[in-house]
Length: 172
Image (tube, rainbow, N blue to C red; front, side, top):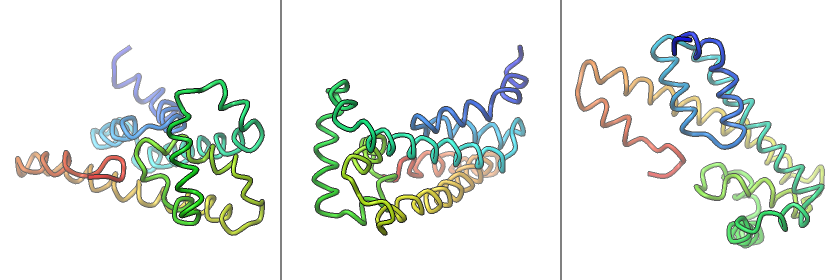
């Protein structure tokens, strides 16, 4: 099966699954495929948003329901879990709103927020859910800037440098 056919057939599912697990790399590949015309940019954004939302909600509810038992099976997570607990105690609202941009802590943060027993209906949990909307907007803007930068490489060789310098994970 040619790569173009493969991307057109399975590309959106790959984006959905990749962003569910944590996938800036898969999102960049999806953006490039949209730039090349293999995928629709709108559907790339929707698939990435759906995967990210589903992944964060999944880890939140695993933390809420299984908490310590789930963590005991993943000892490699403990150092990051402890860091997130400290951040959550100190900066609860800021962490809930901005965890998506903390490299190395993004996957475990929804889990810790679920473990923390933030009350359902509490404004912090509403902010956690609203964070998905905010994050989706930032990802769409960042993806469009990256696609524009890659397009600029045809006009200006420095365009590719711009696309390489843009933050992938919220950091420079």
